[in-house]
Image 1 (cartoon, rainbow, N blue to C red):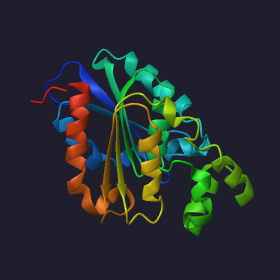
Image 2 (image 1 turned 135 degrees about the vertical axis):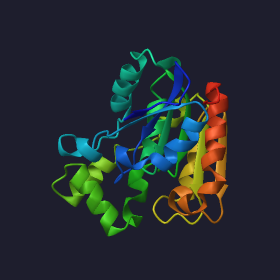
Image 3 (image 1 turned 90 degrees about the vertical axis):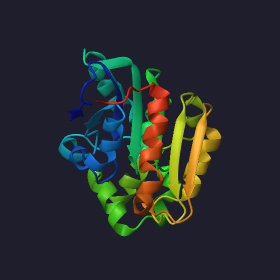
Image 4 (image 1 turned 135 degrees about the horizontal axis):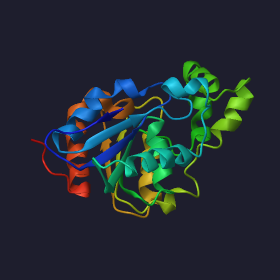
Length: 229
């Protein structure tokens, strides 16, 4: 799904990566601040997500999916191929920086409450999250799901992230420990802004006013985005 800001013929674009149980149709509130700041938003269902989950299971090398989406965006005349960025929420907060480590065409990245290594958190996940992961990974057993989860890691990868990175984490997050955001901030080699909210829950959606417009302002600066008319 592609949404474009009014009055801008060739807009920079933010590619959005969804989470474990979210889909491309659910992002209107997330998209609005970017559109208001002159950036287009391209949202898609990757492996294990939304409409794609019936044919494609979760995979750790999400850069493969992002590469295809970037190729698509690059071919469009109404998007600026030199100003493309990534944004990811929850498990997408892993997918986006993972892809940024491999995709040189990405100029900036936002990670919202993403895990650093999914297998490190496996034992502490609630039963519903583990079962959701199993189904969307197309795994026949929980043990098989755990093995798939071991492929979702930024260990040995995060140091390849050289583009500017904005990380949001909540200290009250009961799904992904806030320390995962800290690990990513320390490992990435590019400029990093780490926003830790003491009273924030998962994705700090209970404190959206403290990061949604702020992260969009940050992205606008990275992409030198013009204000939409």
